[in-house]
Amino acid sequence: MVTVLDRLFGIFSTDMGIDLGTCNTLVCVKGEGIVLSEPSVVAVRKGTNQVLLNGQAVGHAAKQMLGKTPGAIDAIRPLKDGVIADFEITEQMIKYFIRKVGNRNRWMRPRVVIAHPSGITAVEKRAVIQSAERAGARRVILVPEPIAAALGVGLPIEEPLGSMICDIGGGTAEVAVLSLVGVVSSTSVRIAGDEMDEAIMKHMKETYNLLVGVQTSERIKINIGSAYPLEREMSMEVKGRDLVTAMPRKVVVTSEEIREALRGPISLIIRAIRETLEKTPPELSADLVDEGLVLAGGGALIRGIDKAIHKDIEIPVRIAEDPLTAVARGCGVILDNLDQLKDVLESGEELL
Image 1 (tube, rainbow, N blue to C red):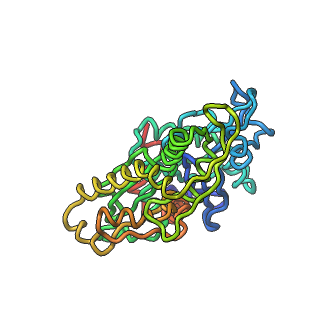
Image 2 (image 1 turned 90 degrees about the horizontal axis):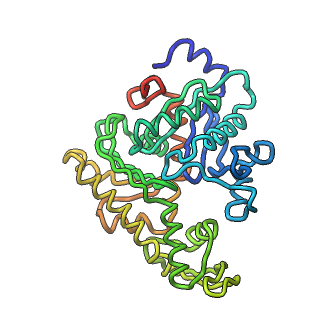
Image 3 (image 1 turned 90 degrees about the vertical axis):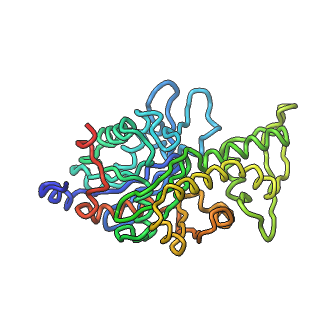
């Protein structure tokens, strides 16, 4: 899988792993760890693929424009539900990240490991590979997100022992039971952080006749969102546009009502976990009685989500240390162990 020439080039290139997420993209560099974490947003001139600010309106600079652009500008999230929705804009975004991270060795194109949702098709995998190659990658290697997340949180997936991971990202929730560096059973659902934001926006509209944007909804989720009753319930002031008068207005919302709004998407994620457990062989199920489930991804930071899941499936549930970076850290582990992990990786040549 890894040729002598590839290893030689690897000495001089800035090889990197990319967690190409619907909401955020993280990049790790071999030997350095995570060096970049930015929103997966690009600002372009409307009707074109021309990235603003001389190609620099990507990530944090572009996210500030979401919902606030004039008619001539579009702030775009080019990935939807974990897969590429806009091929050309995704290429521009990956090119920006590769150049920003690999600036020291522009003359040597890097090898790039990219994590992808386990439920995507071969066509969607090719789209990821082609975007990265056109953006400047010398070689693109794909790995399923559950394997990357499990490696990132230190689960012993190389052993004949059941390990279970649930990675709740922005566009998808990936659930898998792993053993001997392979996926034994898995479920991928396109229900995750984005659907939680939409549920909050729907709640604000139906309960208060208040229209709020995606960024406001995300702030509500982060500040007072929960999946399980809190010892001290919280509240926050929310500003938006009144649907009746069309005037700006503010209201106060509580953590109890936001928890109720989030009940729908969280129950669907729990259902995916149950489905994965139902497909798991009995010997590995026995391991999980003690080993339990590890939560990764941004969704793992929802208050009490571990308690809500444990109440339903009755096995131990714990939140990974620094769950947001689990997949990116796993990509770094793969960069260090390409030969040993070659059986769970795919490259462009294998998908032709």
